[in-house]
Length: 140
Image (cartoon, one colour):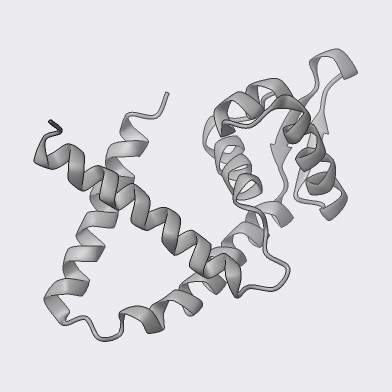
């Protein structure tokens, strides 16, 4: 039987997934969730190859290869180094596009939560900070 904390974390993960889907259903020209994840991984962990990035983003290597090709065409990622040891890195345009996507998602999601009171909003803000700081600290 899972602990109360384990059950709460699973509900948060499920809710996060649903929030992402809700935002994605209404955003034109949306950056795919895997592209967002790849840009975040590259920004936080530094340049890496396609295979390593695929592993970190939990997708197959051919899927990541196609995603990287699209991201390069959009100007969101670039390759550095010789062919055999090439490393991917996010571009300033990629980080800006990811940030714009986050902002658009927030605008779309906010109306669903305007009914919350001050304490509930503060609880959500605190939960988001706790999750972000814990996951950042425990990042491999």
